[in-house]
Length: 80
Image 1 (cartoon, rainbow, N blue to C red):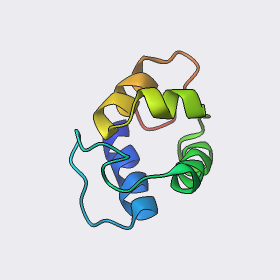
Image 2: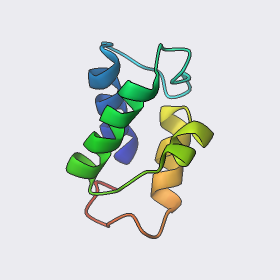
Image 3: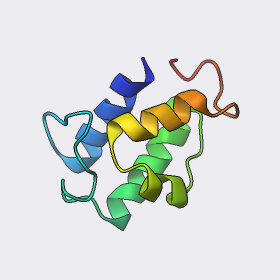
């Protein structure tokens, strides 16, 4: 499931053991440098590029995962 892969990336890059599906990236201490690291991880691990705009519009694991699952440009081998 893509949400679990997204959550694992967020946990690693935010230095947290656990993140809830509805935790807000910015409330967790996220900032632009961490966002850039997450973008790179999405490319390397999920094979998908997520723009900064979409990261700001989807600041939770649940919302960015839903975006990825509904985006036709996301490769089918991204873990869906």
